[in-house]
Length: 300
Image (cartoon, rainbow, N blue to C red; front, side, top):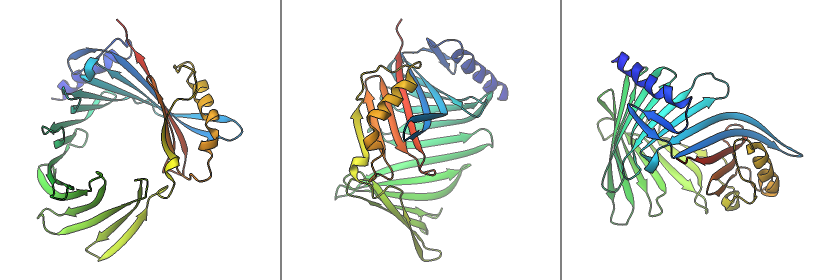
């Protein structure tokens, strides 16, 4: 079995370094219809714009999205991480295989109902030989709200049950975790949203201690204007060679909203047919981040 996974990885690995026109997932060779480049930068925006590369990723996408190979190149690590995903005719992922250099680290399987909702999820960790399984059941209440019933297993043994409650706006407002007898509540969590529909805070009740703790979400009180989607408002065409100049020009033109004192946290998405730029703060020390994606369409 170990020899099989080693051979399988070598098949995947041998295709991505030398050619962009094809890639392999398992034993199948796919044409690359689209190559998506993604770069993640932290940045400062004061008198001038300074970028610091944190991560880069490439997505090799087959025609009709039959398969997608994600290749990660960590900035401070010589290890290459890969994820091979296989999709069904409804563009739902049915299988994922994860690699770390020459090692198969995990395999995930998914099944769906006729509405495209996941009903089965299997996660095998090949490194530590652990298996996690979940099954899902969807129940619509008379008032139009929905309950998702989840059953979780660890290494084949039933571990716990979860009930997630969603309102008519598809907002999750409550989650109840029960132990393996499906009776005793481990904890109950409630979710509170602001007027713009952004998660504002969570409250968790721990029955064992009869204590409720509140956890505010950073940026939960920020106004709706701090979370917007807009077309790219510069005429420059993005490419690997021009990405720094492109981002600098985009951020400089939108400097006023990026430095809005009302927005302690923000997320702005700028897009066109071949490009997507997400400018946001993160939950780690409020670091400002730019995720820059652009598509390279392959022609044969």
